[in-house]
Length: 320
Length: 291
Image (cartoon, rainbow over all chains, first blue to last red; front, top):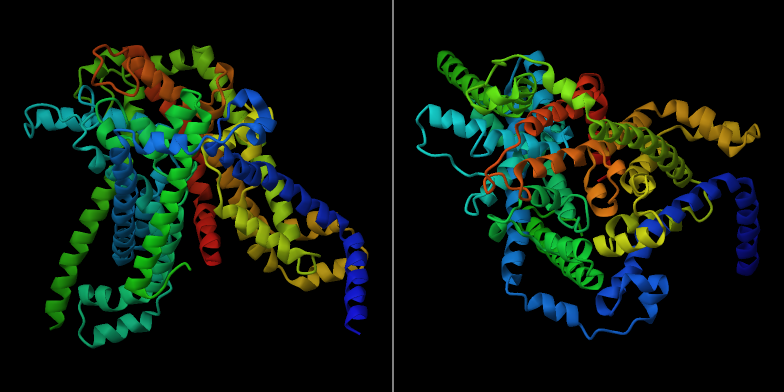
């Protein structure tokens, strides 16, 4: 009985398959893209464990000899390893710790504005920087912060606030703060959108009830607004935690580091990805760079798992 | 009590406005300054003290900019990759997403798991580079287009979106014997403007702003997009790497031209921005519902 049911299903599926062949082709096209751009690179990770050179092509990935973890050992024994590790973790964590509350704060501030037009203007302006490429941010930041022509420096000098220019772009000590400031500038407005939507979804009766009970505005923000948008806060936090994993290209600090890192602030600005980039693409040591990349991926997974654990401890919600 | 409350609210209003105005100023002023710099004479700009308005007004920077063939070719690359890339992404991503959204798709569940899984894994930069190299994409225009053609995030967003279209519409067309491609092109797509517009915008802004792929995968000058060219002028202007404070000489013309380049790069975004921000916001919202 079951067998007939199974084969019935199979003939049914086959019929349906023939009827929807166009859909199947569409999915197949998608899988083709996945195979090339997502899955094939996964196999490529093997080269971290091999003596691979690019000249040997595809076959070389499989035929080249195992390297006995040579590249991992080389990376771990690098005298700058702890520096790279520290910068990578600190910059990711600090960035999240700063941009996330900033977005919530901005959303609350905007929602406290009662004039609808002003509200819209504030919002529109605040997420403008999101649409600017990091390349432009760099150029703009140079005009703002460089010690020779930077507006911030020249203005502060003119006003007598400082006696000599502050080297924002090259100072090792200031780098973390500077990088975080740039990230906040670029992302706060955009990230606030979601919280604003959450706030506008809060039942106004709650605010009125609180007001009747004599709660001032600050109290209403603290006791009504914040608890009401807590689910949104946790959700966004979790999404952001997921984005910490963006090891490869997107979502990470790489663009910022590539542009703002230089020889004088490198002790604070070099991260693992930058190291992998310099070694791999600039110097052509592909297998070594793949090993470094892999370390970065492992680190990302570790960061995600630990922040996930933290989110669960604090809020009771988590990604997994 | 009434008075007391009113006074408290008045103070809060002032504080809120002050912080917001300050924040918006910080967001907006750099753009204004760049525009001023692009309209001010280069040598004069270097003397400092120009903050709000051009002191020696000139269009020279713009004429220099548009006379440089290297910039012009970069503009062409940027425009081409934005147009082609957006078209590819919109077509392929929405097509795949729609097919996956169909409830009667044979093996649909397996397929969907495959796509979600792929979103969370990455082999890292180097293996990706090797794949592109073996595929013969390095140093071609297509390296800008193909890797981003299938946007997995929007595939997932799209699945949710297309599922919100009443099943009965598709069902009816199906029973009338309409081919799948007709259902997609004539029934589903016309109903999907919010999704398509959002996808197109994100693809277009992404392509227009992208420069890192040019650093990674391209070494041919004529294939450089504007955003890349800007950084490289910057580096040449300053001599050593990304570091102006270490090298003494600053090339004035290059610097003035550069602010012009920034304006030229930002202008298209600023021009469409007010009209399209509805979709930007919508896109953010569609995306978040998924989670």
